[in-house]
Image (cartoon, rainbow, N blue to C red; front, side, top):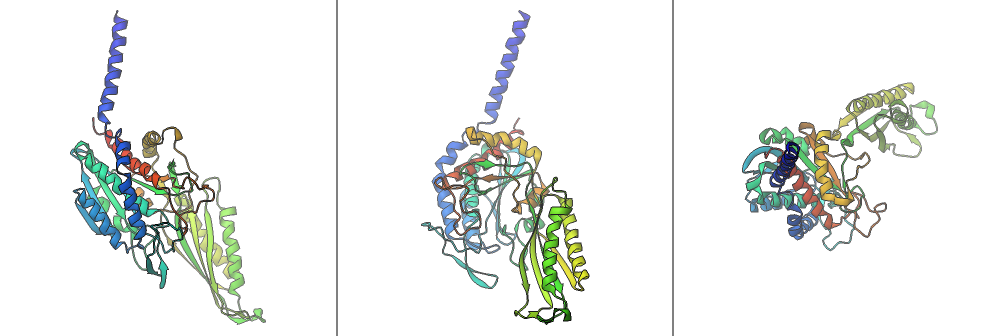
Length: 437
């Protein structure tokens, strides 16, 4: 009799726990329907942003439209953050954590060639040239999805146990020369000191995955990016009398090959991969004149802080030693860019059931390391961050042959934005749920 009583009591406790859980999380169970109901509006927003692209630190019309949409929701909006950024805080009715959601705003100096009815015809000046401007990296969809999420979360504010910080960030592709911008400048101006988020979430379309798939990788996910310049100063002479000078072109060739041995022969490749690429060589004016100066420009990609520092040291040492061996003077300038984008392992584990619930039977993909870089990394250095990828390849296109981000042919399957909106909303709701009890 006593055994039966305890069994029944245990069953009641378990049922009570299930009921409490169901009561504690009714919000996340309705977001699929809410995202579907406003999908057309999200598409309209994405197409407006797509037709009105603006370059980094010049997102004036973009900021105005975002501000208008946020003010429609009754949110108090802060503008001109890091030049053109827009920020709004949704105050929940009950105390709890602050979740930051971020979308980037800027377009690229690319002339669109998609043939879409809403293709960009915008022009602007970039590096002293008139160029076409295009949302060739999907930032138009990022903004639209975050605005869609803002609408849903704002409608649920009376049930929220916490606050939500909406961050629309300019200049993710990099500020123009001589200017500051992006996530780093937002933080420098005190964004996270003012609002103090507990976590930050972001996402990116692309990665040449099938539309609607979600991919997330714990730990290092996207590379740190740095750029370097090498100035090789020799001695000008006639091309027919090379012994009369010091040939910086031949020395530069040796430096280029020498730099490749750093990643392939000097760095422990079993720890993390690294890439050193020379993308520009400039030197000489004529076929029969050996010049006195050659400039090399390149990029460095790493996934480990110590390895990043080590490679910087080795690049300078290698280039200078090769130059010295031939009598040339070599100057190496390395400019640090975005740090490694790291997904907090604990936060990733915590949010994985949320993402798996959204994906259902399809499941969540663990992607390879991405050698591209993201300045979301600055936010994730300050608080635990999670940055996921949302597959966006149109249904009738083979992902292997689909145009990649930054291509003039890049486009997305707009239906995937419904999944993106749900991801923003559900991660927010499931994270704050732990504080509801």
